[in-house]
Length: 597
Image (cartoon, rainbow, N blue to C red; front, side):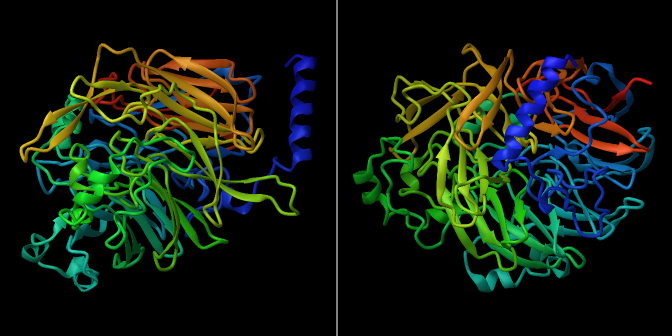
């Protein structure tokens, strides 16, 4: 590294140290119970309960990353949307594939140790075939499946320990929920009486509990059809009703349900009929008509949506778990769900032990645009004028902004500058002629996880500029319905952005030719890694965004990378399998990179 650049870099870190921002607390490296607490591992989805996706490994750094080469490649043999986040514990890599198969590999060589082949309970999947990852703890692996099961596997051989249907009475009655606390004991006939739910997030294991949410609650189309390449099906009336999503805590040993929190409020679902967001965006709602519809649709919360797409974050010191919720359902028929639709399109904080709501912030009340809060929240501290730093939580959103909250109280601290283009019709109501708005329903920051560097204090966000069209059509009941569609003729691209959460400013930004649907990871080598939809896997300088290395994998890199160490050697691994829904090139490979010998 040139001497001048070395001086600038060291001066920059010294400046951050002076602000109290260069810090790593215990949450960063605190892995799941029963897993070796070793920074050489990557043993949770976000490499720690804070979901920072930061690795303290620095063998690979800005001066030598150009020497990075593939060390091994494992091909799963399963084509399909492949957003998996591998985990590594004690030299073994575990990963999930489309259709919920699980593979264990030697993390140094890629050699297969065992493989679990999942037998689907149905051929008609509501919500796609993809899976974002698994969790490890107590010698077991945990996975929620596309066909609505929570499975525990023996980590040593992949054998099933227990297999629990993810079901719900869908009545809102506490007594009905009590009846399914031990779902393993129910007969197939009894299980068939309940509503079944799908999931694709990586669970989180903490304090003998497995935390997992369900998704697809807002889809009216069958996602398995849209997964073949027609995303516009998601924005139209379909054969499915909306469902009431939830976050659950299960006993990690027995599989018994401990608590369940619902994304839609049985009481007070209508909220305050907010005309504006907290940050003063005009939502252009017809409040008079909504209030007139309230009594007619008093039970809308029972099918109100609020999917939970990504792994939650945990602050053990506060005893809180944090996650985002998706849009309200039905998306197309807003007249059937008057009010704010609590707690959809929100950031949520629950009590870890009981599932009781601690606080929430609804980012988009009465969402009709598809602005899910889908990315994992990130926990970090911000220096303040007070003796102690602010304990913050950052949430990137499909609305195109990074939101920063006090994670103790939920008080909003700030909203960043937009990291994707935001137009003046963003929160406008649709018309018969139609409006094209940005960010669109697949724009902004979707489910891909955000990285936080303990060196810069910045967050690194992979996002998309992907406008969508909203127009009004007559509905079957005579009421107008809002139809959302993806228009291929509208130009789209990606942004990769470094944002300073202390002031909301953009430190730097890179534009990519295609939307970014991957996620990122930062390392102590001064690097940030992320994938591009054209197949490029990229390393850039965390300080200025300069691209220092890339490798074309041959398939869309639509999954987040990880970093780990075996035998003193650092590896960077990522899945390259593409995305069927958005027609990014498909593949089935997991590739591990290391420095050339």
